[in-house]
Length: 126
Image 1 (cartoon, rainbow, N blue to C red):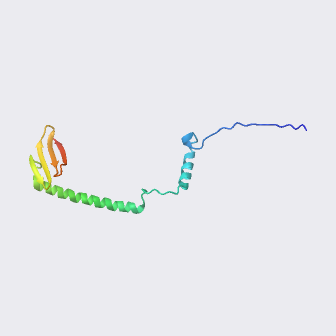
Image 2: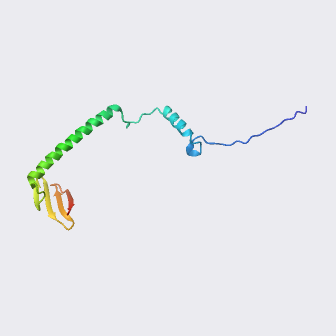
Image 3: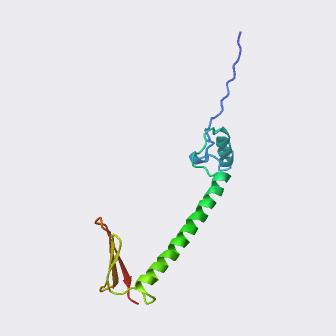
């Protein structure tokens, strides 16, 4: 019974598949499409064609509102301050008080509401 056994060995080398871990960069597309095919969840923030149409309508409405308010503001501005623009002084618009005064860096416009809020804008001199 003298059977001879021959043994052979081969070296095993690990090569990752994922390109993020050193694998071949050509595997990226295959891995990405495989992951998308297995993904059963839906993105709640995904944009659908119906929401695009709704967004377009909302954008139109917003633009129209902005233009109407701009025209109204321009009309009020012209009727209050005239064609020459802002002049020094204190102006009252309901609860808002607008104080226009010259400053070192430009014309200072301070807007104060009746609740203690205040905004200051400096318009530089030309």
